[in-house]
Image (cartoon, rainbow, N blue to C red; front, side, top):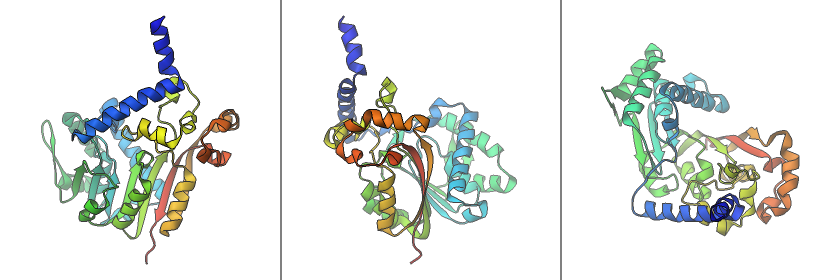
Length: 314
């Protein structure tokens, strides 16, 4: 009987919330102590080497496709990647395509396997053209069980977040700043965008894929996909701020932020709640916190976007 109630508690909305608060506190203490290693962002640990290379290729293609860039547009450009996780494959693809300099930034140090990384890069190299291979070899030297990077072409910074506005100025300025499934985890997005604005050259591009879902917090236990919007902000932050939870910023936030910064912005919806959106929204709308009740059905039904924003040339 005791085990029955334990399982029921773990699957209830408030039982999950209590667990998330405890996990969040544990993570806060861990990071405060200086331990930044985390499984968050360790995408490639779950994939075979071949799957990893395919994933890298698809991410690279997505950036070019949504930003309407062609390979010649990359020549001699400088690029900042936010949240590179446990693999530098996307950065290597950009460099092999002619980018002059990449900086990869991550707040955490994702758990990684250097031997697996090396094998992924080896397979990636074999897929390149002759010109791309020559560029690749200038950046990375493959060894028997590891690899060596040339920091002149590819600089890696972990333990430093995009919100660290002052510290990041030393990195220089960039033609493109990009990320995939990262911005939704940043709780001080205003500061993050101000920092990106400092780092982006005139006429430069922001290219960000952003996921609005709950990342399994409640859907992982069978709850409504918008359950995470039913908690007041103060409680929600206690549950998620130090645990990689989504920040609950939606499309209208990004549109307004780009307008304030004076950027020309295009937002492409990549995923929605689907055909069941209307019934799902009707089921939960009255339970949403006030800040989310004010959002339209159309906005609440969006699960993900690509944000492409160009800075003024002035």
